[in-house]
Length: 260
Image (cartoon, rainbow, N blue to C red):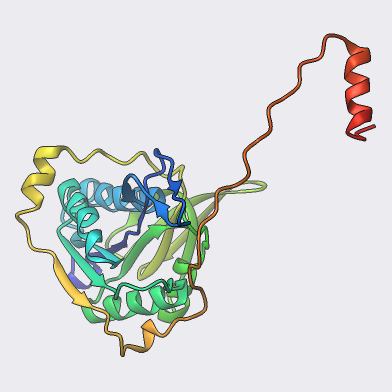
């Protein structure tokens, strides 16, 4: 197999609130978050990149996990290394209330792809915190690459000619698409079940070096002022229900609230 057909995979991962724990709002309207984790969709994308490597010996040259955010994102990158990623990189952003939008993230990823000649980008179809579902599409547009979104199955069908086949669920059933790489693929929840990074592997991964790069205040990518967090507010608490003894009482209560 020629070096030109080897896969160089980039897996963007986002730091989000741990979906298994409930955040709390303090009296000062700030958000108290008990724990963070890898965005579940990105974790699935990471798992798929590792499976591609395991199923296709000698095909994958490199798998790199990349995260854009605060220095705290390094914890997620260590987990990615513990699971089997070859490299990890943090693009550190300044501490600010401004939220980098998907287009800014896509521009950052585009630079990384072009700088290191990646030919396959696998990322989650969306993040569970903002649900934008457009970073992958924007990245494909900036790179002028084909894109296959909401993947539920990924197969390397012709490694010699660099062809990949992806299945995805649509309203009418299942759609099967084929593309040559380079290509951007976004992962659906049905794609796989991510492996667990054990504590010994995480401790071993922390001895590895994570590449770091700072997104400067003067960088045009950081001048994204379209959204700024002002405060957080919990939804109103659900009112307790009313027990009724019989149908007549039920009808009476419904009339009181003008439901009938």
